[in-house]
Image (cartoon, rainbow, N blue to C red; front, side, top):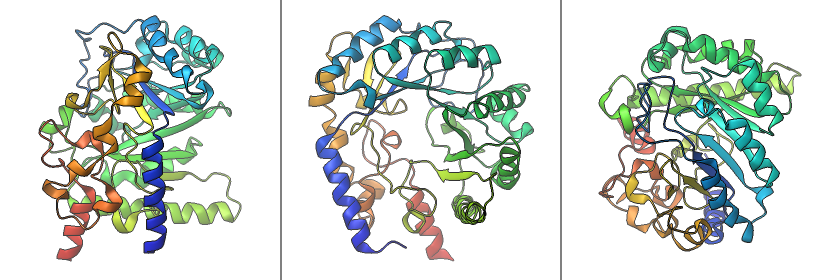
Length: 368
């Protein structure tokens, strides 16, 4: 467990970061179209398409060029997401234009249509980072993704990504009741594909996942997940120290304060950077923080507002989180470390966070 002084120093660092609120990461929801029909989709994209047309790239570029009035564009990464961004035929051209304007960029993909041809085109257009989803071994991945070819195609995408040394990448897995007991097998499978970075998420009760109990972990399963990550991180670090060259780095996502698992299950303390250093431009032009935030947290729209002005002068609700001290957070002993948790778990009522890993783990510990 970290000592109180170390936690105090981090909390001071977080306060300073919030005060500075320097933009360094921007999501672009470039499409709502998708080639899969996933059970846990946070944006509830439809496999048959979306009633929202893809945002014209020129509209997005015009909006973000205002950033260069204050920021060095080379310090900002554009994460292109969706939907499935690969479905945009102009994706390489978009990426090339971003790089010519100094922005770093990458994509988040399900890997289904990530072919060798697509891979080479994106690399040639300056893609520097990529996240590929693999949500279990074949049966469970295909169940979650709603397609019996999804696993094979995702693995093909992973192989292509791993074969490119200059790419910054990771494989992400959404842990649920179906795959929680195969994490060790998934780890060994990824090691066999030479994957070096694996990031684990839980599934939040948003989007389609609200109505599917198979997706949301019970408290005992949350502990099982944390214990697996900690054990794996320790064993993989020992293997690396002893000269192992096939090690994999496993981390838990930045989605929740973990209490006694902080800095054991990931490299950095919990800090929800939504609206502090992270923004997003959604498919309809809305300016928000993380794309999965409730619509009530939208701060403007590029079709009527200056993006830089919105970033500089709004987002107060995300930078001052005193309003979060309600519901589960009201009397929580960890509030000073957690600051109200992840923004995407608050709805328009703002009266209680939807779920809290720290709360569930603490309650479980008190029962044991």
